[in-house]
Length: 250
Image 1 (cartoon, one colour):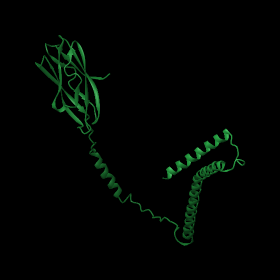
Image 2: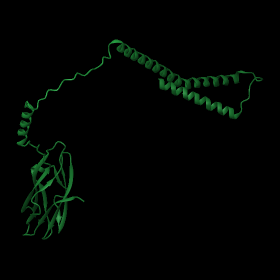
Image 3: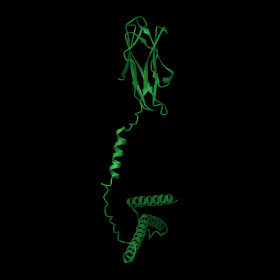
Image 4: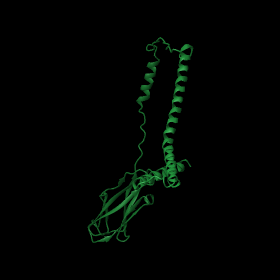
């Protein structure tokens, strides 16, 4: 359920009188945000129509789902508040209620958005403290000369140590490059092995097929149904694999 931001009371003091429970309302939103809220209208008189509107500053940012409700006793009026992505951080305006078919109009202030927090200003005591600290730092009583220690850094780039380190780096680089080439060659061979097997099986099956028809009747070998089925499956598998490899390389 949406939050009730305001309670509007009509016809309590006199005919078409308008009262507000809150003097003003605040809707906290950031640019690009949206919020739905409700306004409760309480009628102490006869049923009537009222009209909701906003000032020029809030047009397009507060929209009433029913801007001309018919109020019997109590009526909830929903509204949507939104701030465009490039809109202002804070907008102030008015929401107006009109009763008696335009004879009475009254509004209440609305603050849409959030107030930017002001940066905290340094107190007046801080410059004095800073001045006292600098004076104490400059005081000769606190200035103690400490001996300067030179850090010793051994040279690794000259002499026998430099030569050995460069030779070691070259040896490691050569070893890593050689091992990388061997690994790549091994991978290429592993990738080509299935293709070679498939191509060899394909040639073998083609050779057996032609051999079956070329041989004379006395030398022909018999082929059972199971063997023929296995040869067919193997032939289709080899052919499909070879065609797929050719399409990948192409």
